[in-house]
Length: 341
Image (cartoon, rainbow, N blue to C red; front, top):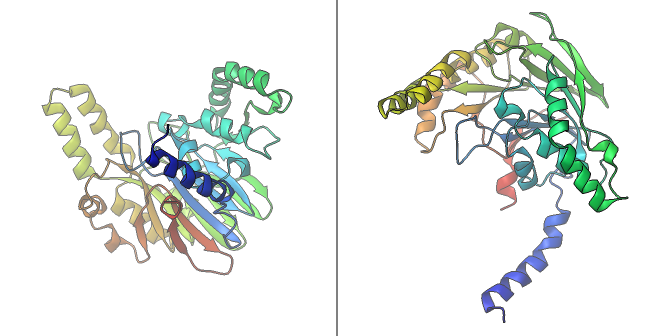
């Protein structure tokens, strides 16, 4: 016979489940441009932060930028219906930016209302990445179609690659334009990794820029001119050097060398702040945090005086953060994961 505790738990979840299933955090959003941070971390294991992934919400549609491991799980924790995903855009093909691509596509595929294949936009190389995932999930699609037939359309299970050329230095190119939203791409510097692009989103007078992985970039500064929100990656030279040395001294020389190599192809927080200041950005959120920050006091060390380099509000982004830019002005910051606890 079930224990009293289990019966109480069952009663509570039976009462709460309809509310959980019916929840729609996007339904309460004002018309405008909204940026949700799904993963604010890096490839380094981090209990607090997932691999890179960001959502941009405009006109009732969701656009996914990069899809690191765990992206679909965190999107679900945020209460966002994967069926609202319009397309996915990749900045580049580092593993921490594409590791969750198959799972995001699967969740969208099975979501009610997803009746078209997921388009994946990206610079040259995107076709190879998408083809690889389609091949890897081919057996999985077959199992699910056989099990759920005729309710599941096998034709929409495979993703479709949409390649665009990398714009020349100093230029931006429109990747997608629909329902008042304009998405433009521009090149950034993540050498020796190439191609790598950032994206700018403009919607009804509001704008947001996602830097992708980059060092300080004048091209990014140009593309970010007068943006309402710049989301920029950053690392801490001091903390990462400390971790690298600790690995080397512990006998993990290869790991120490890999961590040391990371130092030369990401901006620091002060450099991200310099870019925001020069661009005239109105707010700055720093993401792709390297290395992890297990203690709250390390956030100040990570920032290394960055707030002194930028006149506007500056935040270290967290998984679940939502930055809302309503039509007409203003900026609201909240957290969708915290809201659902």
